[in-house]
Image (cartoon, rainbow over all chains, first blue to last red):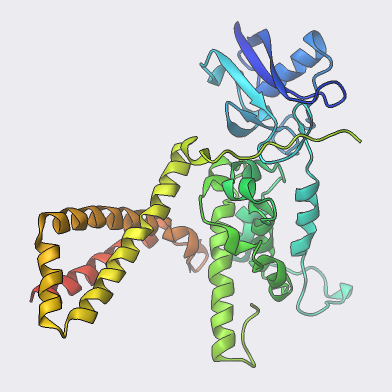
Length: 249
Length: 126
């Protein structure tokens, strides 16, 4: 079954124009089309100059994030038929510089990602012959939800704090720090404290909570940041009471 | 190198979405909590001077004072309720292998709030 809709797509062609504009494409779509299918149809059949990122088409790679009617969405998971508005407005992810059309510059995010050392930092080096570092299901459960991030950056587009001040480390990167802090195999909490507890880190977050609402993987970055605040505050308090055996903040 | 386009966030960003608006109201209502703290400090400062205490009491007992107080009470309650609703995000507790339900955390905080408030009311009125 097919139906008609109008895609109102953000266009910016830096080689030809100095300002952005919206371009409308009236299309016939099928019931099972997601917004990304509609964009690919436009690219293939109507206007080959349209630029956008995509890859896996199955909500795994995190490449196809865009603003759909003002909401940050993975366009490969967003069905056209779910929009009963006359037009569907498609824009690049908010709060990021636009390179061309729906393609944003993600350098800021990519530079911030390694700053929290998002890898296991064991307390002590373990020889390979000791085998795997085993964990109980309960130990895995403590950090698993924070490990599901696909770096789609929808949370950054939903975060007004990042929109107002891009020096903020941001939801996904801080959630990743908490993912490793909560891992029983990790001892890197103290090493991450510098970036996590800096002015641009957790204390910049005012807990709007929208990052959690838009996360397509249920990661809950807002919760992770509040847990980091509590955890590092307790470490700081412990360091005051027990200066020699205190915490990491 | 091509020129990238920046799109600054407008000042009215918090009107774009209900969640943003609720957040802003929650932040603004913290001023009501501050006002209560200032009022308590004010009462403590004038408590030893009968004339000043009577003046403050008369103001609080006036129509203006009651209207202000009702407004502050509503704002402070909104702040308290929305704040307690967020506590499960911060306080993640585990019972063995299972995470304690967020409703239990928020419920326990609500009960604690009611018990402490009831206790204070009992001390003041009793």
